[in-house]
Length: 105
Length: 395
Image (cartoon, rainbow over all chains, first blue to last red; front, side):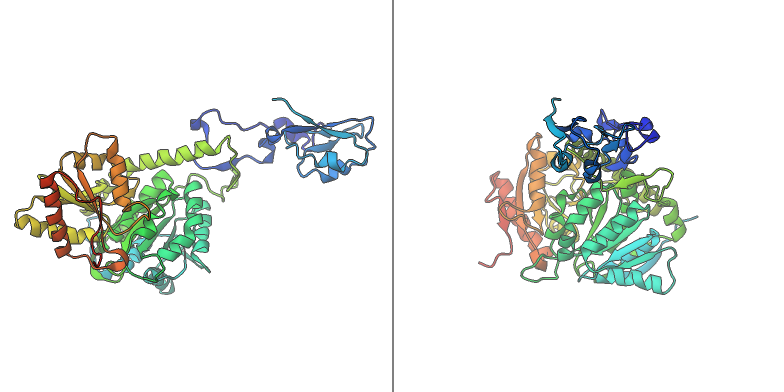
């Protein structure tokens, strides 16, 4: 399991429209949050250094999106499909285990 | 069923209320304002008397909320209606964008009333024309019959192209003046205007949607284009619906500009709404005196009847645009639109703007005759004396 969404994540499909004809007539949201990937809004991405992580899960509590999850080994993982790169996790981490790295696209 | 109209002598406002009833509106949310109030009073009377089924009337604390309630109802799939005037319409302005942007076919009657200050309750088109860029279709009624017919047709057009529509009538000249209106028996209205089939509804639980969502720069642009595409399609829909209305009920609305005695006209008067009734009468008088003049009544201001204006402009030497409205720092709004349409064409008649009737100033047949005299001189000289004339100004 690599996300808060569990099995649901494997079914999630990013909705993107290639031409104007593909768009719905009205600006409605199709599908739930699961299908609306917000990760491409990001400029800086959080990177976790497991060597510094003390498994306090403060980052997990503060993340305003469902973008931080607890891995099976007890360390934290980041779901980059939903992480908007706000940096709150890095700011809150008491051991500075999370750094924000500029993402090249 | 054979069409036998129900004739009644009613005000323009009652014509609007009866039309909303006959269109089987499901939700009405409105706030009183002169000169609109008797529309919603009449609708609440229908409700109190048990004359309507399946109607929810939502009393609200402002026009902004009235439109918000109509938007919510329309998003849930209902046929929603409201009415307002002037300051009330201005207060609704934000929500007008929400209705069109969310592609909801709300229909509203706006009774043209001059914007304050100074306070005025009289006829002036600036309130509705200032909503030009909100994505609402706009139909201007010449008389009480056109108010009734307009509301019923507006629902059909709006629900076909998924855009809201505004039926505009004049303060007092129509709103409180009684005239014969031919109403259509309910079964025949039902045949013409079947129940709404919404594109999406909030109550379709098998296909959940969210409305009012964020559109990032990656998507907003395409939704704007879709509104414009539907506006363009609306021209064809208006033509078809207006033609069908004529075939069923004897009054043809297939033309977005109604032409009156323009065939061999040297010049024409062009304008919106009730003042064109006065102009038509003046055209008859002028024709009897040897003037070759006609009238072009712009029924639909949005979408704008570009093609029809071009066809008209090709065949006349002059157009006198009568604006009961004004855009400060520029000119009359219809005049501005007309010049814009013709610039990139080969039709360039002499076109002059007369600012008339602001704030309910009387505009009569003798005024039209004076303007005709002025236009005749302009055409003989092949040159405008001035572009914009404040016709009534006390000097």
